[in-house]
Structures are given as structure tokens and as C-alpha cells.
Length: 184
Image (cartoon, rainbow, N blue to C red; front, top):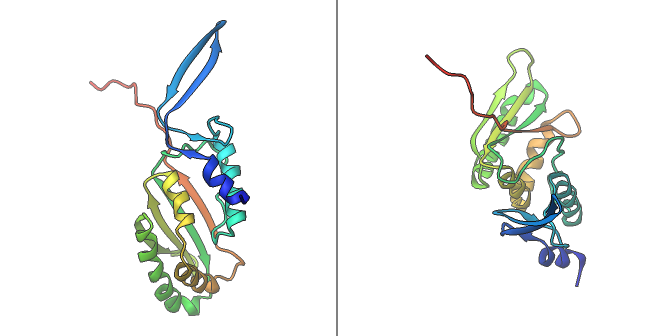
């Protein structure tokens, strides 16, 4: 059995997790309704899952790099705003916009909504592609859905970028606590 097959069979997604722990000298059992389970039967931490996901991306030679996380990103947290910044030769703007239009259908097919491209009013040739996805897990799944045709379309758009790689950022909706302010 290859290591890839081992990962597929040993990781359990979205099932009930029973956790036993000692609290105040007695054993307490609780159940988490959803979670990602490691091959050892323990829940993933956010960083642990991020590291495992990076490993899977490297093993699968996926087109998109694994996202970098500095915050705790639960799989169902969202929505997620993805931005991709391009700096292109201003004389090639029209060809770039024709090429990036093809990405709109691709992104929407893979679960994105509110897709758009913005042009910097202060700097010619500076564009920002944006789209939103319902949750962090859904965005991670987008990384796995890239087809050969998608790769070709993304590579065509990427060829316009003067930088080696476009700058990609991920914004996850902040977990706001309800306001305690009273209104009169």
C-alpha cells in the first residue's frame, strides 16, 4: 500500500469524535459533533491539519500552493475572500482581461461566488482578482479540483504577470462576538 493510499484510508473526515479527558480528578467524556481525525484517532489541530494538507499537496504535485495560516482556521469557518494580485505590462491589459475572464467560470464551477477583477486607479497594469467561497474547507477543496484545462487557463493568465508568481491572500471572516451594547 502506498503512502498516498494510507492517507486516504487513515484520515476520517466529518464524523463524531468522542474525547475522554481528566477534569478535576475524574474522567469526563464529551463528543464533538464534527472534526478531522488523524490516523491516530485524535482530532487535528488547525496547524496540524495545515501541515498535513501541505504534505498532501506536495505528494500530489498540485498546481496551487498550500495556503499559509497564521490564525486558527476551523474547516467550517467562512466566508473566505481570496485575492490574487497581478502586475502586468499595461499595453497587454486587454489580452489579460480576455484571458482572466475564462477563470471566472472556472472559479464559480468550483464553488466561488462574487468573482470580479479590479484595476488599480493609481497604477496602470495593477489588477486584483477576487472571489469568495462559503468556508475554509470549501476553499481547500478548490485546490483539489484543478483540471488540466484549469491549469492551462491559469498558466495563460500567469504569463501576463511581471512577477514570478501572483500574490495570493486569504481572508477569513472574523469571528465577531455579539454586541452587548443596549440601544435605547
